Amino acid sequence: MSKEKRLSDDIADSILSMITIEKRFQAGDKLPNENELSEELGVSRTTLREAIRILAARKVIDIQRGRGTFVREDFEENSLDELSALSAVRLKADDLYEMRLIFEPEAAYYATLRATESELQRILSIGKKIEQLISEGKDRTLEEQAFHRSIAKATHNDFMDRLMPVIQEGIDKGVTLSNEKKVAAADTVTDHRILMDFMKSRNAEGARNAMRIHILHAIERLGLKKTE
Image: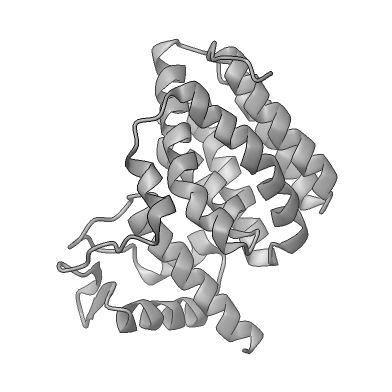
């Protein structure tokens, strides 16, 4: 498989995750225009077009000439396996954060080693967007999901990718609890910056430790059960 072909497959998966995991787009929704989406994903329009063709062939999206690209009205997310059903379980926040503590530091480690340049730039770009939203006091749930989802995807490990529905629920609960408790988000900004600096310099061990500290800080701030 050529490098360009591999990249278009990766971008197709990223767009699919926006639909099935991040829930940014529902059946019938129009995707952003080509310029916006290629800039967000950090790829050329040629690569994006190939990714769109891949998704059209999978009957995920519908290309309507002159109107744009839409999630198919008849699109239904297929269950990946029994593990993905965990996302429907209403787990407690402390259990979810314990799951995050087990898996996400390792995800940060392998993503730092394996991420393509475009994947790394997407992670860094979303991280900057999160900082901006925090400074403006705006909701950042979708961006937090996309940030951690992009890290998991950059591991190039299918099992880690399939754990994301559980981790996403933990992120959702964390942001909700943070808002309810009016927890200061300054530490989140600092933690993200340290993590991104390690990833940018391809320091995998530093990224692993930074992610672990980030989650431990969240557990402490939110008053969740301490991990023994």
